[in-house]
Image 1: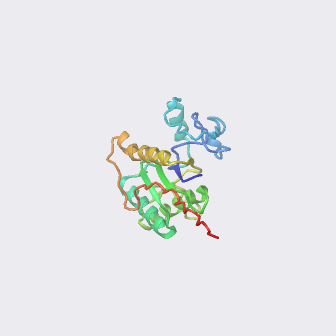
Image 2 (image 1 turned 90 degrees about the vertical axis):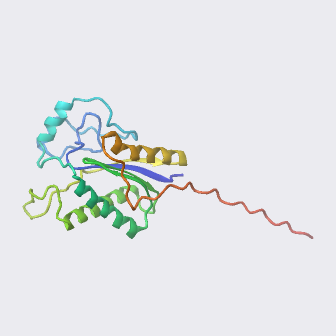
Length: 211
């Protein structure tokens, strides 16, 4: 039984649809990127970030993007966290771990009545709303023809279904050490709750009838 999810979603321009390590995209939507290869969709559940690849080619492809690749500042990360917090309270959702890094987000969340894809879209929307409210949008200098801000999040997400308490603890540890591995301080967000393993249901002995 699924108890929770480890989800990862990225800032615009961080993980391209034709990244040589694989992506979650079925197609490359920009002609500027298509010349660097077709979409490299993969269904693997493990992280591909550590796989070797042509870094120079990847950086060249990123320079061909319509907008500059997004890197969140510390102030922007706090606004994103506030958006997550507001949504968590509103939807009564349980979050066990969260790390907001300059180019991507890791979270471990409990299973919810909504599908995980819907949850990720809600998180992106809530954080974008808060970023706009605080006038901190990283692509504010590139409004569209309709005066809207370009999307600061990339399309899609990674997800891993967590079926046991050990899986959840392992995912929480992975998320918590991610900032440390990048030379940053551990993150503590007020909407994150400690993980408590579900208790086994109590068995009630059937009453014996006496004739």
